[in-house]
Length: 173
Image 1 (cartoon, rainbow, N blue to C red):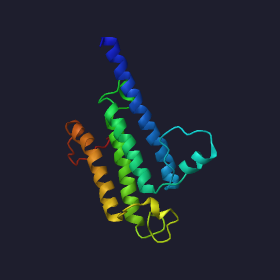
Image 2: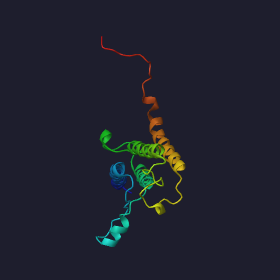
Image 3: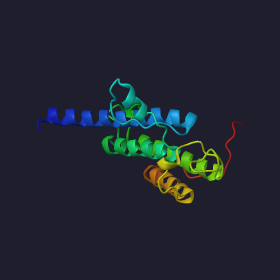
Image 4: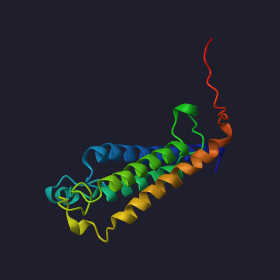
């Protein structure tokens, strides 16, 4: 490939990564508000039956896993340093966002366990057949573990850039 072709491939990869990032962001906004939410991965025809089939609300943990999967794809495509400097998306942005989503779902499940707000909980209004083999404790562990594993590379990358805490307070005298 020529240099120009290689540059185009890099731009295309970053654009694809950004698209996955922003789809995850849009799902994140709806997920925070609604919890259980339909997952749409393909363009649907403008026909009643396929639209009705696709509009089935998925359990919140599946929606969170879908968001994490989109962020995994974004991380795979985004560069370490954006070509737009500090104004562009990069791997660290997607990793930190992924950690945020995982931490949110893990703590949500932990602190709402045993209520109708959590999939499979008593009085949960969702479709139990969509849960499969759902175990809330393993879901909590999964999401909290993903939060740690997503944030660790970013924290490890900046450890030398941090200023040592001397515990001294600075005042303007």
